[in-house]
Length: 295
Image (cartoon, rainbow, N blue to C red; front, side, top):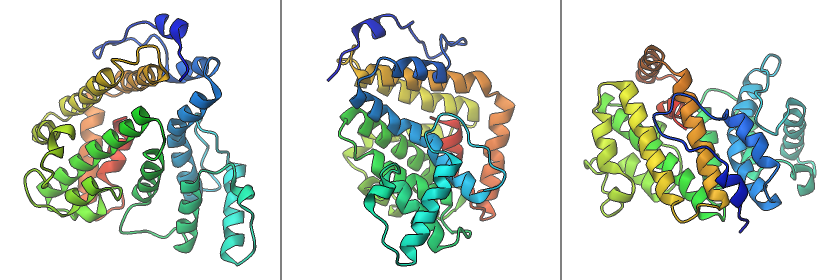
């Protein structure tokens, strides 16, 4: 495991209530890549895939007008090329595995799903179908910290989605992402603790139950980020000069940047609009809100 003594020692301290960022996350990422080992750079690439996910899905929906957002590695030309390859596969042509070497397997699987349904509306939102594939892929990485960070975000998002569905009488099957044992409990159990038993504490269930009743939505969102911030501190306590500490620093910068640009009125309106669409059967989901507003 590579150590980054000089780089970590030179980083300004971050506090959850900081109003001014020492770096923009994008600038920190650019600086970081100049120092990372090839192995750590590949691991960091797992998180850049969040941008590729959004770009690919919006490109499929708006092939002529969507402008790819910076931060990912997938281009519009590459997306079109892979779509052509998937078409050839479905028509029975032989396409070598090497032809897909630049595309993560879960995106390959997603393109197949999209073509099989011709991109038509689905009871389960396309954002959620892609997120399920992404989380399964990311949680399979060999780095324990990264895998557990993905699991934390998946479980927090799903728990809040399940609680919102319970509150508004919505079908949880349409909004819970993933195929883990925890996901299944959240989909099917009517118990207050979703029958999670000994796992409830590790999943921060009591805290999330309290937050679900918080009427100040901005305060609730900040409390969710505080939970994640605390997790990052605990997870890197013994890894001060390891790559994991640099990842944690990056995630904290993302949180601070989001709060620097998100005002109370915007957050309240976004949430209330989304819940209204959920109740009308829109393919916009609570998890989409969390992906856009809670990193």
